[in-house]
Image 1 (tube, one colour):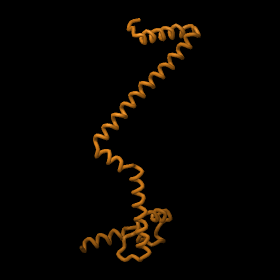
Image 2 (tube, helix red, strand yellow):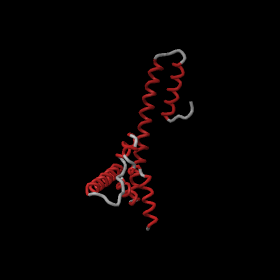
Image 3 (cartoon, helix red, strand yellow):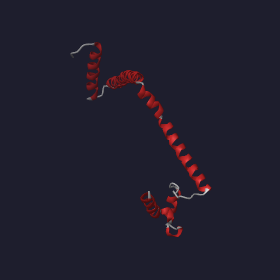
Image 4 (tube, helix red, strand yellow):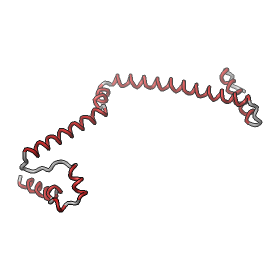
Length: 146
């Protein structure tokens, strides 16, 4: 027990809280304001109230962080594997349908633009675009060979 007290006293001696104010730099004072309160054997009522208030603020901050990350919802989901599988199945189906619709709209827009460019009869690009549009139309009709 005496060894523990000696180690604690040595740590307190090295602790910056025990330095006289004149020995500290101004930058150190700013850092010390945000550190935890010192652990002394004899505390006044005011120090204990400040310590309790400090602990209350930290616990409130931790609770807010946990609530913000929605860890309770995650734990609930991990405890119900069927719900997790169902949610992932619905998400996968939605992504697949969305991808299919998106590619269709994008390809239709590109084909429309290519047809408009082909109608302009540009010297080199016009024949290339016309061939490309014709090839796509063959594919859409179900004919495989050009």
